[in-house]
Amino acid sequence: DHRDGMVLITGQFQLLGELVHFTIDTGTGKALASQVGQQFRIFAFATTEMSAPTVYRSQGSDRAVVPGWTNIVSGVSDAIELQLDLSSTDRAREQALLLIEYWATPNDLALQSLLPVRAFVGEPKGWCVFLPAQGRVLIRAIDPQPNPPLLAAHAINLDPETPVGTLVHVQVAFPGTAGNLNLQK
Image 1 (cartoon, one colour):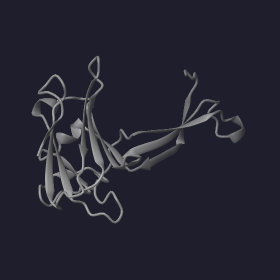
Image 2 (cartoon, one colour):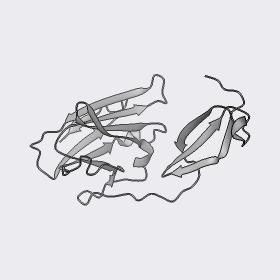
Image 3 (cartoon, rainbow, N blue to C red):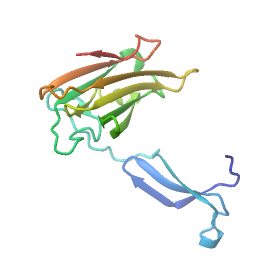
């Protein structure tokens, strides 16, 4: 849907953590409400320098914790530290990312996050997520840059009998490097 004459209404900028929220006006772009056309809300990553967000670390592994990935299910303690280990050959990928999903039940997507591969460059010990001993976690490695794009996926069913403090290592290697996603416990 091509829209000629889109005007960015700069007065609508709002910083939301690392996201910038702004509105696009397809009308005249003037400030008067009667002269403004259809508006669209857009969310995009901020390109300006901002203060670094607080990064929480695992006490056991000193890995960075993906934001939001602790105490996912209310009233249920975390039992598993899932450690994401990216292949050294994949650290140079510019557009690659990991899509991590936690499903508390087959019908309840409780949390979903994108972790850019670039995040591993600044965190040499790697990243991790904390999970309760229930549900399912899906990890997808995506790189849209090559043609055709690369995709690898792995699902892990979380056993309710898993003891607290269990470490699970997921070795991430994009197709064409060292193979698909591998789970090593």
